[in-house]
Image (cartoon, rainbow over all chains, first blue to last red; front, top):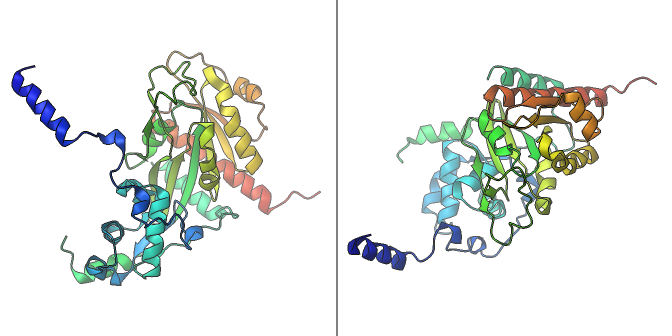
Length: 137
Length: 203
């Protein structure tokens, strides 16, 4: 390794003494101001779809919303996204994303699809459709 | 991003598809993420954490020496069945100490795959137990690893002491066709189970 390489490596180290394994620099629950639960918890299954309301255009200018809130709205405006997809896309724990979505529900900026009631299996017709769809893959 | 206003209206007014989920469970390093990735239309999304020195002695790595990380959260994929129906596949955490995540994952699931490795069959006991107790329909899929001895499904069924209605299939978790057939088996089993529930046999 030349002297120059060595110096560059030292500079990089000085600029970033932590790496990706260190995790996020902002503690996730700081984004929820310490809240770990939302009243909407029961509706926010991992596969519940979050859909942006048409008035969600205003989200970007809403000073009350954090950048993460705005990003959720932006993503859902492209297409309805599941809670799990939003958590993966934002690289945040599902618990944090649920609280943020809860805020957006309260602000009427998004709504959530009603999932199949957990106690019920989807009906025969739906299962038939799934099997046909899979066969066509 | 500059979308027209009407464009946004139209998108947000679109009817959301119905979403369903199937779980993929099994021991550590058995190929859950591989199976999900083989059929998913998106790269499996995941929250993965590298095993630390502290975690290493806890995890039994016999027979899976090549694997250096384990999934401590869930990884998942997606299949758009048709415009009104989307199926999500969730790989369950491979370690017993993350079981607290399972209840949430299992709630509302259509069914499950228990992926098994014949070299480490005991690793699938806990998943089989869990789904039996919850009454969630599941298929046992034996991932045929290169270099592992092959056993007929009946031998696997006997070794796992499975109920006769539980499907047992052999697969290569890397193959899209195999992974698809495993999922079809789960949904068909769920359909039979559901039909049984809806129309109880006359006694």
